[in-house]
Image (cartoon, rainbow, N blue to C red; front, side, top):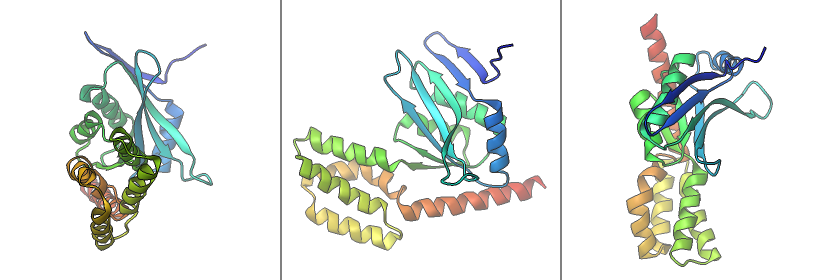
Length: 222
């Protein structure tokens, strides 16, 4: 008999349709693999699927060699709203019991707001590929050459790879001496806050904070 137990909710409103899906066995496996741990989850929206979007919640299964990326849950939605993403995160809580996690996302405000409102103990960092992609798009859109794209992308990538705040400050100072005034303005206005919270040293700090918060929650529940 055909079963649809992977569909957890279908919610229809006047201007939006949302479907939250996830294979129960995959969810149970995720819970077992992350028992007592703070998971890192990757969330992104796929475009050009039709007149709807698919947002995938993924994780790396560290039990296997190479830590392959596995799908945990999917959200099919017609509108890119905070409410749409909140629906998925509420069901994530319900099905896994997650209170704290590290989310790697793009810089879509609706996603960031949904995480903060639904999972206030979660930490958010931004995907390096999306940040670099934004840099390349800005340079190209402002008449830059392929060499300019490579230069600015490499410069921002060096900032992201900084393992200490001192290294970040040094890289930033060196970069600003070579950047054009328009790029400096773009970086300060649109990128600086996302970059500094997504550096290697910031990610390590976020993981430590999440581990501490998880430990505190476990103690509180005892």
